[in-house]
Length: 232
Image (cartoon, rainbow, N blue to C red; front, side):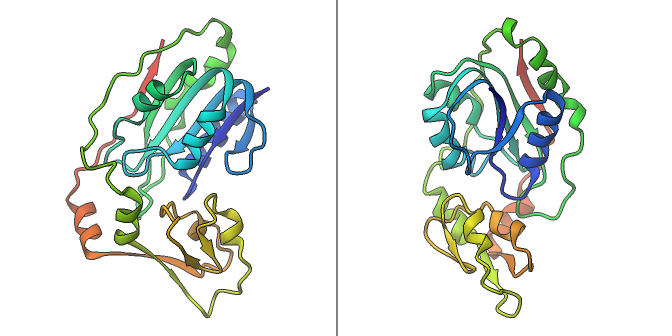
């Protein structure tokens, strides 16, 4: 079985995963709803949070059994850290392709990624998977404080606000959250601020409020538009 497996908060990683699935004819699976862990060829698409991979992705990689693996890490045009190299060093998977893709930042109102043709080499790899060779992902720069309490830093910098007038307590936010970090519009300590709840609220009852320090940080950070592909 071949699959494109993804985690997506605001929809950027989903759009890329769907494109790859459409082109390769692989199954498209949400990592938060997946039950299988054994595949022949796997393309894993996920966002970078605080220069790290989401917890659900790391947990999935720890149980994944696949003959070949391609990694696609989407990042909000600030920093992708050292995610791909860290995954290669931590898990014993046969990685034959990997990419960093600049996308819309979860907290910013900016254009989404649309240059899907840059992903064409990965879509074509489905035709030569059996002859593909393992790649070596080089180490990239990661801020020394990136791994220091990232979840708490995200919670301090971004608040999810509930509009009581619009919330009908459907609890879709809870069902769509991979961490069960929200209940009827109220987040708990598990929340990583992926904003999946905000994206999926049918009544638009959830909005985002950034702290002054977070707004200042985002305004000062130089934006990157690097698309990096590792593939033999």
